[in-house]
Length: 338
Image 1 (tube, rainbow, N blue to C red):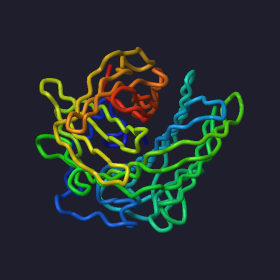
Image 2 (cartoon, rainbow, N blue to C red):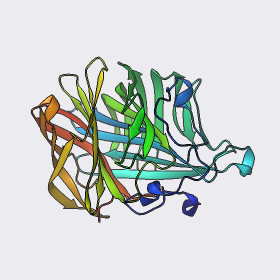
Image 3 (cartoon, helix red, strand yellow):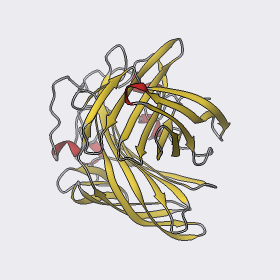
């Protein structure tokens, strides 16, 4: 079934995300995102994901990271009942500690109830992994694997944030784009179950929902994506999409403490300062990140350099600390390194 996942079962560069989108929907400028409907699935688009990352702290001050992701990939731009459904679902879950990185995945077909997303009341699930609640401001989050499990409560403390032009997020100079919004204001409380035993944790979480049919240019080889929460209440989402023989494309959303968002095209800078060899690739794990227009000049460092998800597809994803002009925490996702 993995061989049928267009874009999601490619190599580390996620190169299939620049493939053809014949027959599928394409994002358009001026489209208005509507909630709660757009919390749900969009089966006429080829690729979609619902993504939670969380920075957590245990009773003794130990930092942890958590990931919960549900991917949807379509073989055709439609939905159908039973085994006729062309929708394929993939779940990734991980927990990162200063000394370990635990991860697992689930794979499912659409149309038979094994996986899906409904907007009202909100529920996203694959097998017994769930993110659900009466509305999107109060959610329960759960996943488990051979070596870990977690059960969390997420409570929104601020508004949804639309990236780009009211949710129309451009990804290349050629105009490829996605629809993209976040909820970066979740408070989190719950329990991690680790090999050494249960740990009660609290912290903050960041949710992303993105969908498209051709979000990357076929020249782009991978991305570096940062979600950073600063101690003064401001937040920064920034990414750069790399190309082998060109400067690539960068974007940032500067998010004020009240949720007011300012977009910056081409102003976000992320420079690798140190790399580490993981099981899968030589990856940058310490970065200089700058957004001069907002006087941001920080160093971003991985909590655990070995946060490599040897999954389908493989990539690096883990919690980071932030120091410099702003102090804080966040998450980093990087793809396309060898």
